[in-house]
Length: 280
Image (cartoon, rainbow, N blue to C red; front, side):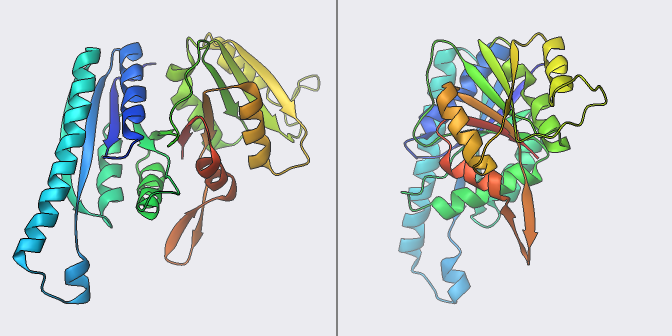
């Protein structure tokens, strides 16, 4: 089981370099190819409100967007070439409304997609949330989310798996195995778990523990009883363990004419300080 085809979203944010670095690092470990995609967003405001924008203003806006996309791609190409990994790059011209669909389609044709955590202090937070949600729930592929504050760099790379016994968690674990192999330590975390094994002497999570050990992972099982909400328990454990990666399933709930992150998923993605790999 290997990752061979990686996709990374490129933009002009300060966190993009960390995102590219993470994608390239995985490409080097897995001998994979990485594709950088920048989204050049078309403005539809003028058409929406029914006014005619002077051509000079429209052309200037297009030039700004084009230059930003090209600069992001150039930085990616420089980093990939310096690292000696195989790479491709592309600029997709689209509206903000269609960007998640376009990126989700690209993600379907890759093993894993690297996206950035929305930064609440930037003007594009709503757009980045929309993009992340679209790719996470509509691509059918795993998504690796890099914190906007930057990646944790540590000599011994540790990971935490949030395991609840459900199918989404199982999918995330399966997708994460190539990223977990070779790590110094992996913790299989269950929060307020109830015994479900058919073997009376087994503790919750024992079956998954054996499965991961069969893949050669150095895994320990942690059953946590917590008085706080599950998301807080996971985030606290992540901080206390010093892990640089969290693996978990992604959950959503439907609302009238829109989708929204489920409570735990939303909380993790907006308060995470380490990278998170999620699968739907």
